Length: 181
Image (cartoon, rainbow, N blue to C red):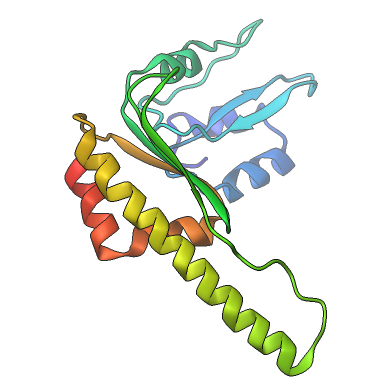
């Protein structure tokens, strides 16, 4: 919070514990904080779109105009919800509909409870299943981007972060998304 304009004055109103917790949040899009001095409301939001302005105020109510403008902002999104065995990829240009979307399903082995050689073999097969699922996700993304005629502003991922990262890390998938952006 030290980068905030007039931060010393703002820090007078916040608990040190709250400041410490807020400082631990690493959000590339910024933070929106709702805090009352009676300590009844303490909410920190990390929005999915970047916060474009910075400021704070003391008032009798919360000013939600910035948050509302983020929600209403027109952007084209590529949504990737990655889960082992079932994932969703979609492209949207408004809050209500997808231009294109696909659920990708694969057979991915569940958890193994036994140890020994059986465990290692199971883990190797599960890793192969996950890699196959990632390839299916990449294959679904390519025609989806080609079929829609919009410039993607942001890619939002959810679900299993490692799986989503694997899908986007591939040079072909990354270049597809970068070309669309």
